[in-house]
Length: 332
Ligand SMILES: Cc1ncc(C[n+]2csc(CCOP(=O)(O)OP(=O)(O)O)c2C)c(N)n1
Ligand SMILES: [Mg+2]
Image (tube, rainbow, N blue to C red; front, side, top):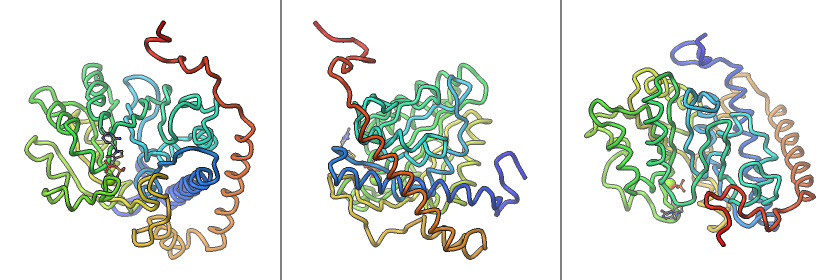
C-alpha cells in the first residue's frame, strides 16, 4: 500500500472507502440540516455542496494541511464544506456560522455559511464575489515557488466562474516560461451558474481544454465517483508537488439542491446522486449493510440536531465586534 492509501492501480483500500463514505454521508446530512435551519428561520441564507461530496471528501483527505508555505494553501469557494469536514473540522462550527453566532470560528457570526477562513490550515477566507480566488492563488503559489519545498496552492471554483478574467489570469501567470507556479486549479463543473446553463455559454468542449494553449497539464474527470476522484486528485497533486508546475483539473459534479436558498434549496431528482451510488457499491462489495447505513444516518442526524439545539443558545455578535479583524479598523 502506498502513502496515499492505494492498493493497486485500480482499487483503494477498504478502510479508505468506508472512511470516505462516512465523511460523504456526514457532509450530506450537515448540508441538509443547514437547509432545514434556513427554512425554519435559524439562518438567513444557505449555500453549500450537496452533490459534490464524492470529489470534495478525497480532496480534504489528500491535501497537506498546516500553516505556512511548507503546507498547502487553500483558496476554496462556497461549496467546500465536505472538504473541511474531511480535514477534521467539527460540524458544529458550520452550524454556528449558519446561525451567525459569535462562536463561529470562521467569521465570528459575520459571514455567510460555507465562507470558511482557517489560519492554522492555510484556508484563505472564502470570497462571495466569484473567481477572485484564482488571482489570490497566484500570490501564495509565487511565494511557494520562491520558498521551495513541497507546499502547493489549491484553488477551487465553479464552471461559470471560468468566464471571469481572474481564471484567465491564473492560466497566464501560472505558466510563464521559466516562472511556472505550483498551483492546482480545480473547476467543479455542475453545468450551471445559478440559473444559466453552461451549454448556453461554453463553446469549448471541456473547460480543461483551455489549459492546452498554455502548455498546462489538464484532465476532466467524473467527480461523482469518489474512487476516481481520489486517484486523479492524488496524481494531480503529486505532479504539482514534484514538478512545481500548474495543473487544471475539471471535475463533473452534481448540484442536488439547486444554487442556494435563493433558488429554493429543494432536492433535484434528475441529477446523479454520488452518495446513493457509492452506498450501492459498498453494499455490493460487502463493506456495509443497508442496516448499518440506516443506523449511521440516524446517529449523525441526531448528533447534528443536538448541535443545532446547542447553537440556538449561543450568543450573536455584539455591535463593537463589527470592526474586529477589519484592516483599517473603525473609521472616525
Ligand atoms: C463577481 C461576481 N459576479 C456575479 C456573482 C453572482 N453569482 C454568485 S454565484 C454565481 C454563479 C457561479 O457559478 P459557478 O461558478 O458555476 O459556481 P457554482 O455556484 O455553480 O458552484 C454568480 C454569477 C458573484 N457572486 N460575483
Ligand atoms: Mg456551476
